[in-house]
Amino acid sequence: MHPSDSPAPVLQAQLAAARGAAAQGRIAEAEQLFQRLVEAMPELAEGLNFLGMCALARQQTDAAIALLERAQRVAPDDAETLKNLGQAYRRSGQLDAAVAALGSAVAREPDYFLARFHLAGTLQQLQRDDEALPEYFRALRSAQEHGEWLNEATTPPGLRQSVLAAMRYVDQGRHALFDGALAPLRARFGNDALRRVARALAIYLGDEPAHYPNPAQRPLFLFFPEIASQAYYERSRFPWLEALEAQTAAIRLELVNLLAAEHGFEPFLRFDGDARIDDYLSGREGQRAWTGFFFYRHGERRDDNCARCPATTAVLDSLPIVRIREHAPEVLFSLLTPGAHILPHRGVTNTRLVTHLPLIVPDNCALRVGGVEHAWQEGRCVVFDDTYEHEAWNRSDRTRVVLILDTWHPDLTDVEREALSALVGVIGDFNHRAGVR
Image (cartoon, rainbow, N blue to C red):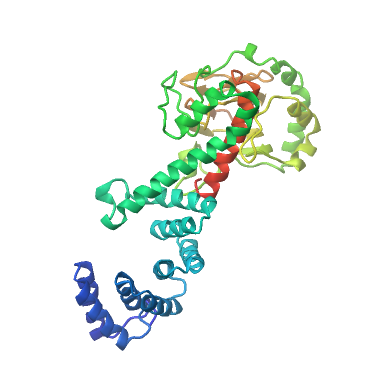
């Protein structure tokens, strides 16, 4: 019978007794009770699962597989059944079948970290390390997010050694993978040229503590040491600003045409998990909006948008913009509606700085970075480090628009910029495969 079906009252009492015995560790008694239940209800997936796992514990893999395959036919979409069947296949040496069953389990329940852990172990047995590494990482991360596998007390005794071994495997694997991204550049330029990048990687991996020059600075992703740290930067550090500002009129004209067309702007904020717009943007309900007309988003060039603004695009193409596949740059006309307030938040890395070219700025609009307020002036750029807490508001009755673009921190060498592009790309690939948002 399917787990969702309700058995007769007498059988319900027997089922409750079997569950109670299992919960109290009286396994032999529970097994007998479930055996009787399965005789009365041959399609009781819960009973078939319990009996199958008891058989597996006695190393009776053929019997276990037969019982669990019966359970899977009854409940083909049940993740626990698929996990149990995968374990049985793995124990019997049917590793490809185990991968299929365990993969189906986590496809149905992505946060089922125990199933994912067994999937990773099976992939490791198959020497499919490129797949095993992100699966182990995701399983460990998910378990710890649920308060499990944090220490001996939160790890079942039978899993402790396996979990510790997996942690070592992940640590060694991530070190090798990320360090490997820098190997070609080390061969070309030597270790000294990559010394600071290596330190940044060590900090990211937790091998070295991050010593922030300013306690107000807190990158969410990657901290690069030994470079200047301040909320706002002097214009003299960026000789290209004048060329950008000289095109303000042409850029603004293209912006005005876009606003008149009322097409191409999209919400800046995208939400995952439990995040809500109220966490990032305040203002009158139904009127507050933070939208963008993107030339680049997460490193992807929006060719259609660029074609609509040729003058702006020509200027952008001449600037030292950060270029990291699937990550940077982020370049856009940023529109903030009247009364909207972008709440305090932080950026991901101090390797890049944010430049604003103000284009339409009514009174009572401002930016605050690291506790220091800045009033935008149309046509005059401001450069700041967004790993300091920052916010922006529009307290006027008109729309505010600035051009936003990411540029490299000026203290980085060309070699370091190339190395960071390679490193962040590899980290991003791994995190994507590991389900890290």
